[in-house]
Length: 114
Image (cartoon, rainbow, N blue to C red; front, top):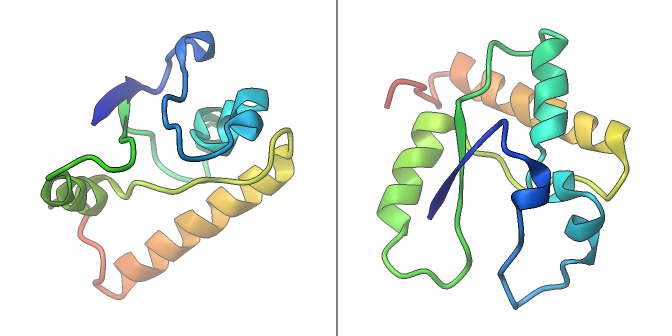
């Protein structure tokens, strides 16, 4: 598991996972790690603020489930987002994810202080 600062230089990012085609992420890293889209939504005031780091893993890592579960509950980690270059589609997906988190939180399903 790696912690990546949200202000990371995108040219320093790489994908090491060998089990899937990287071409879309190589074309637009926001497909896998939507840092630009999240920064845009934050700047637009669509949510409070981003955490200073994002956490990523590579598949087939042993014994990460307990730690991942804790991080997901605490930080509301997202998922793969959109198609390369599809800024509006990426933003729309993230807005929907934020709405789902807000809805779950309103019903007591998400505790941000875990």
